[in-house]
Amino acid sequence: MGWIDWTLSILTLIAGLMVTMVVMIQTTKSSQSSVTGVNTFYGSNKSSTLDGILSKWTIVLSFAFIILCILTTISIMK
Image (cartoon, rainbow, N blue to C red):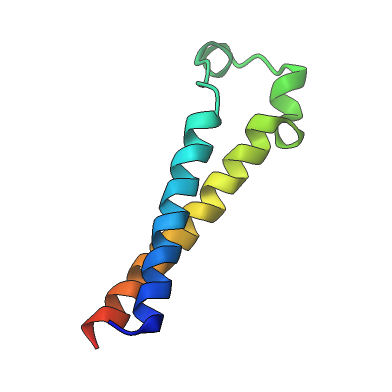
């Protein structure tokens, strides 16, 4: 394995750990507001709350993890 393989492997490991930490920090979602359809202040301003920010980071880090997994596999198979 060359330095590119090692770098991609380490970045994949870091991205996986970061996704895990961000998901663990998030609070559990309460199904009561989605069942009743109540539009609360929290629900309408979700993107500016900590959970909204963590949700966006979860998506970004997940895509980065998937791309790094694919690149690492391609790099190692060469």
